[in-house]
Amino acid sequence: MSDSTPIPQASESRTSAGGAGLRVDAAAERPAGAGRSAGSAAERPEGVASEARAGRTWTVLELLRWTTDYFERHGIESARLDAEVLLAHALESERLRLYIDYEKPVQPKERDRFRALVQRRAGERVPVSLLLGEREFWSLRFEVSADVLTPRPETETLVEAAIRHAAGDLADREAGLRILDIGTGSGAIALSLASELPHADMTATDLSEAALQIAGINADRLHTREGIRLLPGDLFAPVASERFDLIVSNPPYVARQDAESLPPELSHEPEMALFAGADGLDVIRRLIAEAGDHLSRGGWLLFELSPEQVETVEQALTQAGFVDLERHFDLAGRPRVVGARWPGE
Image (cartoon, rainbow, N blue to C red; front, side, top):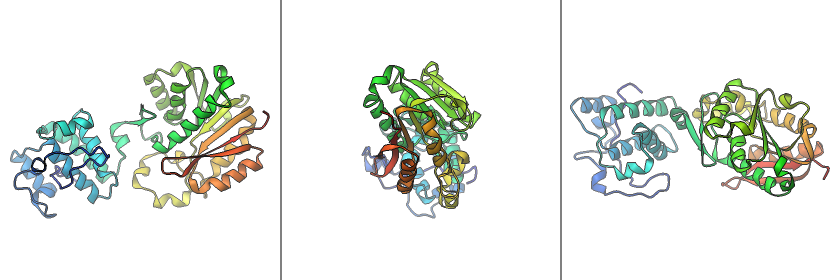
């Protein structure tokens, strides 16, 4: 996409893709004389640039509607949501204001900011989270960068499972509950747990120093820095002689052979946080093999994985001596997290 990326024009759908169902008057959605022909001047970069130079005014709704269509034509699945989030960011506003102020003209500087975001999203397939520099997770806002894996909704399944154990069979240890997050990245899992379990002793490790810097920034933002240790190193190396009541992890679990079939957005995230050997299980195997040496009696190991890996991983857990295996399902009904208890209680 060139610097003259088109400014969005109205399209026909009236409902937010995020399910908000916010509607506006149909007449307000389409600028006077706007056509829907794919070859119309306003849909081509040079045509819109000419309109901008001629003083063409674009409203919030017109920008939003055109961008949604533009993203869809570039194969972006969450086209409407992405358009809303990026436009709200460019306007330094909330998404809801887009529909309250849908007839408001967008100023040239705001259009320039928005155009730059649209170019990178559609042309380079940069994820929205990296364009904004942050991502919401567990109702908390986390800073993210290309040095960390962007927190995803399905990983909240892991946080939920950990809290359930902390409030259940590990409740008698809450005052001194020791939790370890392996491969913390942005710190999303550890800091979400810290927000819910303020009395727990939290430790988070990561092989990447750059990732730990992001985790530290997030700990400061969320006022949890004093309650967490951030340690550099591979898996359990930073805590070689320590034991924990609960070990959690979202390790890399994508098979290297699947790299070509992944969404292009993932090319902007660190490979070490995604790939784990030919079958995607290299890190998980190490995690299972070493976890027993770092769990207290009756402690739990919980980690995320691909649903297709569940049965293989459960066999490995049983062979390693773990008991009471369990599965936790994401919102799509897929097994996303497995858990197992280290025997002794």
